[in-house]
Length: 254
Image (cartoon, rainbow, N blue to C red; front, side):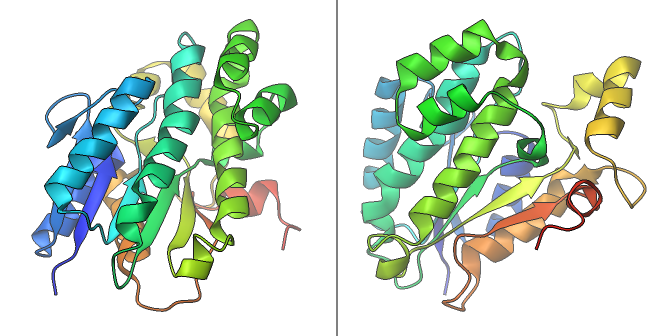
């Protein structure tokens, strides 16, 4: 039976690859992005998030089988937007659409994190994010923007872990998990590959056991599974798809 999914960040990169994969399998997908999507919304604003939720209710008929919070940016020159989209936009998506998931017979939800959550960051920003203090988190990130992307992804992973086991999520059969991609070749990362200093920095921050970076389609394969799996036991996990980065940087973590 075909399933109905909602995916943010649907117009490019991993989100677009996932949309195409799910539709090729015969499923219905409601895409969300700034443009070129069924729902055009700016998830960096409260108004955009509210618009997305209302349109999702209308287009889905009130029921979603899965939600992928995939919208995100990686731009050290835009720390406030990074905070707004990567964390608060993702949380608003997942929490705002949870009532629609609750009406599905097999609801699944996924947030896209990152291997960057392993890197040193700003604990104050992470604390403000998890406390839901958006204005404070933006101010702190703007003061020290270098690690904002890392901080938002670390906070999102922690939010997923803390939220997944709650009665209204796992207790209600809504299985929430996350993925932690390493360096993926997407339109967002493409400019980095033309900068030798960034290529060197990525090789140091994301050491790999395999050769070559992954495509968005490879991550889409994992996302497809997490949005559709049938068992009722996979919950609150951050699954890294990184060519071995996690095992190299944290070999003793179990």
